[in-house]
Amino acid sequence: MGKNKVTLNDVAKAAGVSSSTVSRVLNHRSLVKSDTLKQIEDAMNSLGYIHKNTNTEADSHDNAAVIDESPLILLSIPSNNYQFYHEIISGTYEAARVHGYYLITSQLALDPDSDPVFCSLVRQMNVTGVIMLNNVSEKFLNEIQAICPVVQCCEHNDNTAFSYVGIDDYAAARNATDYLISCGCRKIAFLNGPLSYMYAQKRRLGFLDSIKTANLTIPENWIVSIGEIDYDMAFSTCYRLLSLENAPKAFFAVSDIFAIAAINAAEQFNLRVPEDIMVVGFDNLEVSRMAHPAITTVSQPRRQMGYSAFELLYNHILSPDTPTSIILNTELIVRNTTARFL
Image (cartoon, rainbow, N blue to C red; front, top):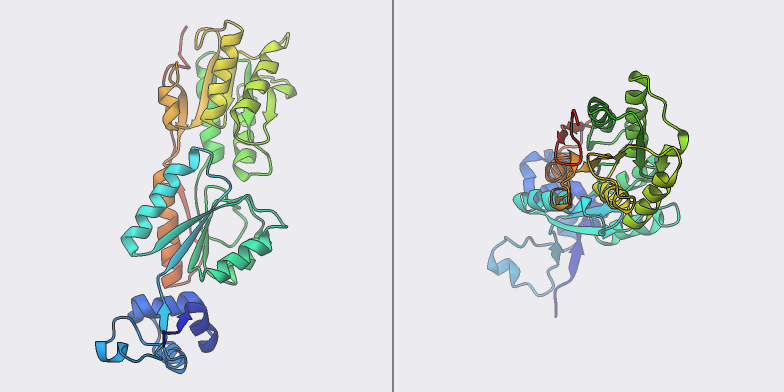
């Protein structure tokens, strides 16, 4: 007769604890209180559980149950098409490997209709923790937290009681805009992402505060929120702006994809970059240095963001505590789409 499979959720339900606590017993039992440890071990015994590392004599019992104890982390991203996420995923995988965890990605743009589906997925897959890159509500985060620990990465809400890893989007955008102004730019258009995202709101505010401090006036139609990080949509937007009688002479784009679109749109009007028009991007994607000309951009430590998000989650799995926020530094990488004193 084959062995029965007992999941972490089965043991957790029988013991009246969370699945992450059961995982802690299996991997780091020294960190678990003695009374909780006994409670979980009693549940294991009642379910016929025998640990994989027990002796061969115990393993020979045909009716013994074997627990599926491989710790699994779910990384939720809006889409795998955007190059921005690749380094974050790589950093997260590396941290998971170091700690002996498995990592899977969910490529789903979450909304109220899909939230129950995602929570059901977390339960069915017996997930030990979730790293959330999606833009989701506090209510949804609480629903996930009721199942397992969750950490936000990149996109986060400062006002929620959840740990997160991110950057100072406001300061990064303001610094980039200040730099364009220092290059002599006075007519700067802003290519933003959807304002439903926190990063877009903060970068917009950083841009506007820089413009205000410099006593510049920017037409409202130069400040554009594009529905997604999409080259074709950005190219159409830039082409329209450059067709205006009062056209911008510089672009600050919240994505390197948008910046490339601005460069190529400028070429359609025989505008030279940076002599006739300057461009600053964001993210320091690999394509930003391969573009012609190479793009001045804000560099995010994306690999470090993924690694740090996993480390935060790992700490919460082992020892739930108060929320922790990690704000990583950005750097303005000056390349050939900007120049001073032309």
